[in-house]
Length: 270
Image 1 (cartoon, rainbow, N blue to C red):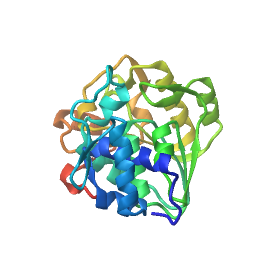
Image 2 (cartoon, rainbow, N blue to C red; image 1 turned 90 degrees about the vertical axis):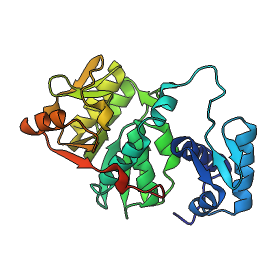
Image 3 (tube, one colour; image 1 turned 120 degrees about the horizontal axis):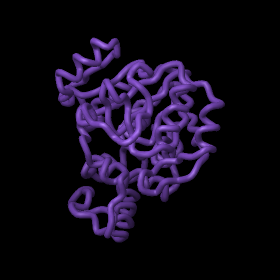
Image 4 (spheres, rainbow, N blue to C red; image 1 turned 60 degrees about the vertical axis):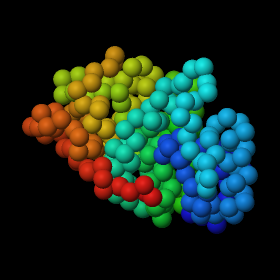
């Protein structure tokens, strides 16, 4: 937490992301985490509730059980998937980040979970490059210097992609690239559904000294449309303890390091 507080619009965006991601939040916790009064948070929740974005409950707010929108975005759907596993993976990934380093974090929902870990426990000095508007808005700690890659905004995926994005990332040098994807198999590697996403992941990998894939166990054995990179290009995979044993053994026999984290090691306060 820093001494400076973000503007109301940014604070409300952060509250909305948290409620949608965690399913709910208490007024007291939000006031503490954003360093504002409970009265201020109460007003924020009223604005979000009146906009049809959250449901007010006694002492806080919760995610709408059925979003009152005609269509859901792919990003919104991914935020609701495997939240406990993603939190555990993100908490472990946070331990891999040292003070004074430069990292890349992609626009995945697990990347957003990592950004939340960094916001809760910010390094002494960190430069973070991202293609995610949600991550850029969510990181307000003064010790984290956020660089947003240019590009075309995909509203459904909430990600910046395109030629400008790839060229920009290609000029950088980062210690670690934290990435994710739609699927992973030993034969097909890391796969995704869209060529612009594959191009961005490859640019991030090429610019980084180390590539860490953050993949919840549901991604193992899945094959999406395009191969972004072979498993041999991944320096470390971090996953949860529901990963299929055969897939884990296959990857390790192929020389791919895999860190498996227990989901119940992460509490809701983290």
